[in-house]
Amino acid sequence: MSIDEQIKAHIEKAIPDAKTEIISSGRHFSITVISAVFEGKSPLAKQQLVYSSIAPLMSGADAPVHAVDTLKTLVPSAQ
Image 1 (cartoon, rainbow, N blue to C red):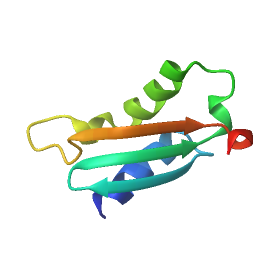
Image 2: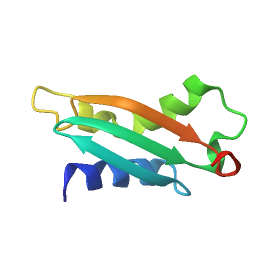
Image 3: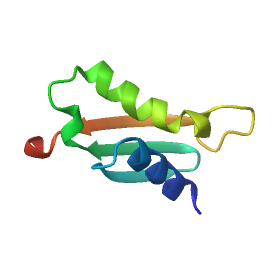
């Protein structure tokens, strides 16, 4: 499974209704997540949901995810 697929799987496991798009450049990623679970949450709370889901991929010396350059967290009606 590619790193992009691993990121998507981790996010969608933590946020089951999420639609996720990953764009990668080496070990740097741009992530867009669309989910109703974000409704009414602060930008920080939305980001925390996503980052906590991919934390295992960002920890350790050999972590496959070095950085998330951009993270968009949207609700379905905001598309």
